[in-house]
Length: 334
Image 1 (cartoon, rainbow, N blue to C red):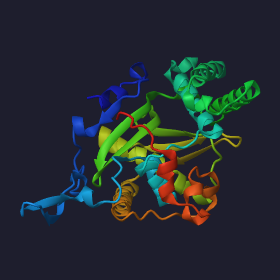
Image 2: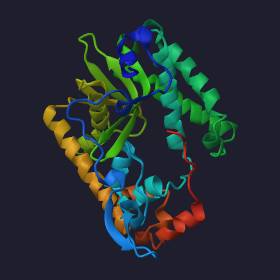
Image 3: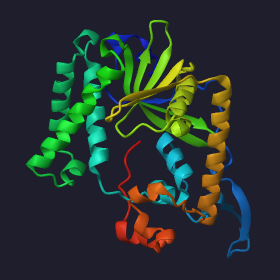
Image 4: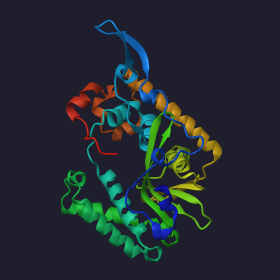
């Protein structure tokens, strides 16, 4: 089984982004099967021209096609603003690249290179070399090129990413991390949909426990918002439990901005069950929104960073114009 190959220790560390699919390998006890909704059941009938009664599939009644999967980022987007979710996850409209997002991608790539190394080789100098390697790859990326950075802008972009990469040493000792999965894809069935995620790093402690780590390059949240920020890594923990059959002992967010900080939590039976119910409720809300074309905006501070703000009714925009003007993103293979 693919998943088991990620748990054999550092000598079996996997660098490639390989899909671990519980549906193809095994089903854990209690894992839910797809609901009737996900199978497009017949929910109404109509009379055909020949006078026979034919079934009308559920998806034909919907204003929008359902997204094929949910992910931690999609769950967060739907919770923050259903209209933004419609634009990004349902209509799959492209968003312009930003310096912050592309810089974060560069830092993630550098840390992936770092944790591929033998633990004893994970030094600050090695991290700097990994950042340089990742930067060379980044300059060929169309999204980075679209930023239009001149030589000075490129230097600043790389220098800021280098500082963030070095801050990992302020939060942990990389030589003591037994990374058994990097950029690890996992997918499972939950509440009638496919829950999918990519874990930045999965490690195995000396006690044989799993730890999920997610890198963040933005500012850490205030204590008031810590729990909401942990939602993504708790979903990764749920994926691990469903796919690997083991609940991680710890999940953590490592913030690498100017105020480096680690936020750590311990998943429990209660929190896991609550998360499963929450995902189910969110998916039900997504289905209802797609059926009735009812994606309501939620005005707030996040509107200042929304790529679709000009199409929002609260800003005097027309949501229908977004697809006309922006088109849709090309479909990527699963």
